[in-house]
Image (tube, rainbow, N blue to C red; front, side):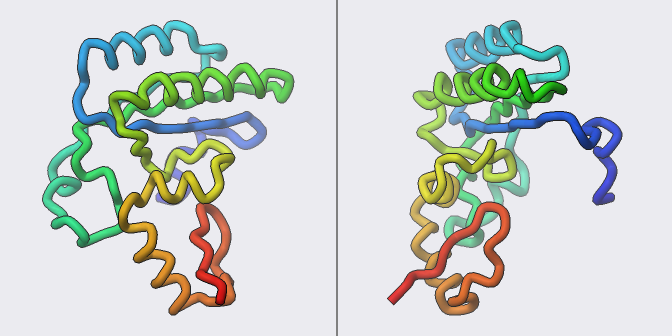
Length: 159
């Protein structure tokens, strides 16, 4: 299962994915998604819109770290391209859609599509919201030396 998508995303290509969790799919948000998809830089890119509900909504508040349980949809610009010379244009395309959707998302994101984690701690705070401080406390208690620091790390609190 870990390799199920390997054929769709071959090694050596370039990838930059972001997300915006949307309260609803308003006409304005649909227009932003459609015009962004029309303006994609690479023919390998896409904008996915995911409907959220079911188990995502059934989790009681405070039951898990995921902060986007109130969102009805997620827009996910998936910038996929081949040449490093096209990095800036493709990354800018994905960032632009997420920025344009911010008024419809409250700034909420799904952390599996973090781009290059260029926002640092601000990205973690956006992803976890009011749960962030609780996660820092857990990290401080169970991993004070930050041994598990790969990916979207939450740093332990330093004395």
